[in-house]
Image 1 (cartoon, rainbow, N blue to C red):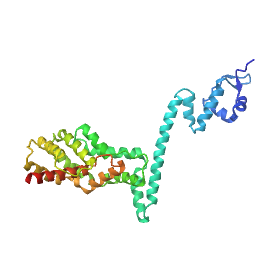
Image 2: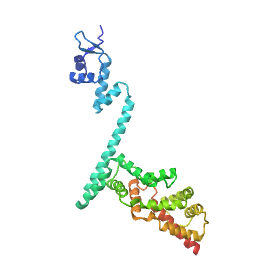
Image 3: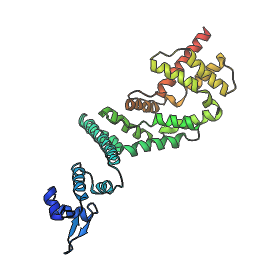
Image 4: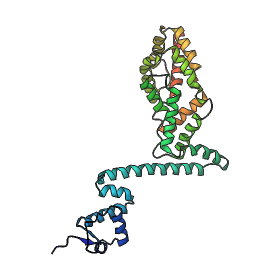
Length: 305
């Protein structure tokens, strides 16, 4: 007669798993009892063998018992488990790389600098929360001054994601972003920005072309020049203020942008840090502003000549 049930001892002998462990699996619901013997002892069906093998393989990967239970009971598939575990491993690797970069930054500096660096770097050891704090800060500062799509774009530029594989300099730069936004008065420049936009609320709708042309010039490494980027910039401001693009208006605009808070050294430092964090992949708004200001100056020199 073919055997249809097995005792816990027989399963232990056949699988190499201790009786104590099998009893734990059984008590946890991982190994259902198929029947009871006349003496009340547990008996297990044919599926117990394969289930034990699956449990052993998952446990060999350090899969928690709670997760193993979800798989063997069909609550989640093996594929779903693998995807979830991979995501968790990737997050952990990022955390370890940041810790490594942090320790290297603390190791490779003079003794007198180490405590200062530690104070800065301690701000960003919880990466998701660190990125969220940057994003929430800029949404809070800029909301109400610009249209939704431009607000989201600007916040994304000001709140870069922490790199997955940072070097010590990158980790320091990302941490210093958080130090700057916590500096009293740092975002006072947004008040100046609010005043300018209240005087010309249509300006945002006009600036897209100028921004695109300026970004192309900056990324191409072209020196500041009079030309289509400057013309588009002037046109945007002139239309928003219902003015004509005249030498007098250009002189007025040059004075306005020359006094802009975009030249605040702290804001310039902030965009420089963003450059370091992103590897220069984003547009440095201070660099773009300076490029336009100098280009506008050259256009004025050309018109007066």
